[in-house]
Length: 376
Ligand code: SAH
Image 1 (cartoon, rainbow, N blue to C red):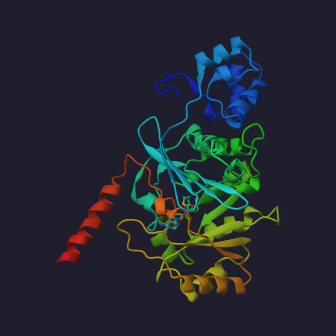
Image 2: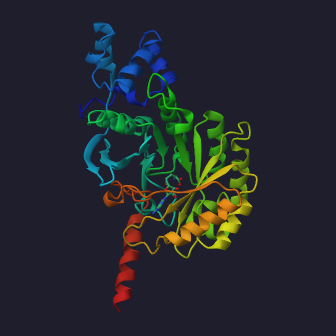
Image 3: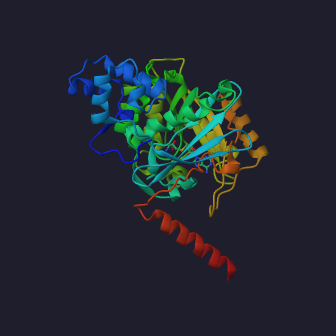
């Protein structure tokens, strides 16, 4: 892998089919070359133009001079006791992001990041506490899948390790990086790249309402919404974005989202925080606001991180909450916590963010004050 490739060379990892066709036309080649090269890069995992044997020598030479295939560098790989993998990837500017693979009996899910850090600062999420640096490029987003597929295919028992699903539930808010996320989604679905089914690619959002309408118009991948609270007062506190796009606006877009396809529903994520959002009254409020929304509830036991004051609801409370929702006809599942021994579980991804918001500094300072205060 060449780390010091000249910056003027275009990184082909970041081009979806349309952009790749435009690239080939721009260098005086036929557009169908796009399909051949997409297949080499994403299907075969090639990173060297010389390996692309169905291209003429002259074309390979031209690609060497004008283009590059440069993924981020894998800094380390960690395996959890339950088979979950986490990769720390270093980007060209020194920031690091995390990507997680979660194998199950019948599928393998890759959880990928869309930003370095996150601007939203949800109170129960450690990524938010790391602050924010920048959006990921399309190449940096799709590289996470490219790297995982290559790594996993080299392991024993390939069939247990294949990526069948992608969820954009890693670091960052994908809908605040719309322009770079959309081409990455195109590549995930493209038969010349990863050929994943639209039902197996999920964008998760904290509720950027205008971008949700745009997403529906641009692609029909699956949607997950990080709900976490059944009323505005509590949601303002847990998900500050709610102050900008309150629940009635969010529920309106959710009601409309799959209205042209009655077989599809939205996954509502709800982190279970002891004594905060987990009472029977909260469950009843939830049922009310979700009326008319085709939704599946996914209850996520809270995953703790350093200095947080929140605690996970106990199993009994989570089960009671689920039972109330189920009785009202809401399909509800409880997410099994995976990879928590390597900090790979939901909300535990932190990477190494060169924070531009100074939020991390403030967070650590207030945590320190709490400790000092506690000693007095
Ligand atoms: N910004 C997007 C995607 C990233 S978060 C979004 O908000 O949906 C992916 C999921 O993990 C979200 O539902 C998020 O709320 C949840 N999550 C965040 N921190 C968590 C924690 N500490 N424990 C459990 N789930 C958490």
